[in-house]
Length: 115
Image 1 (cartoon, rainbow, N blue to C red):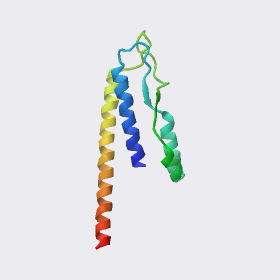
Image 2 (cartoon, rainbow, N blue to C red):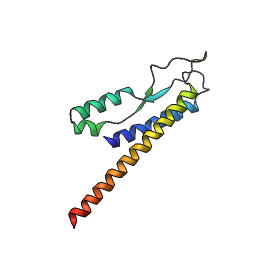
Image 3 (tube, helix red, strand yellow):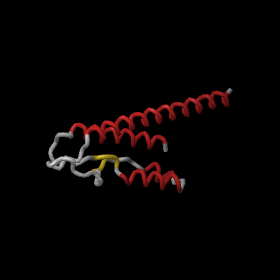
């Protein structure tokens, strides 16, 4: 599950970068991680469905909840994107540290059991 969350954080970063790059593009519609990913991930974890979990792949989709903030129809708010990208970066760093710690613990356990 942690790997899927890490994948999702990477995809979110791509979405936020695209939004920031297009903040001045007339008619641009804000994108984000597809909202179905969170629902599908929670469902797979709740049901302990490893096959469903492995088949999950986060994707970028238009944010249907975003409303136009300018007369040209652009739905990006730069300050919000920067804040979300920063938050996502913190979550990504946490997940990488979490996975690294778990791998180190597994390696230590394997060395101990192999002695």
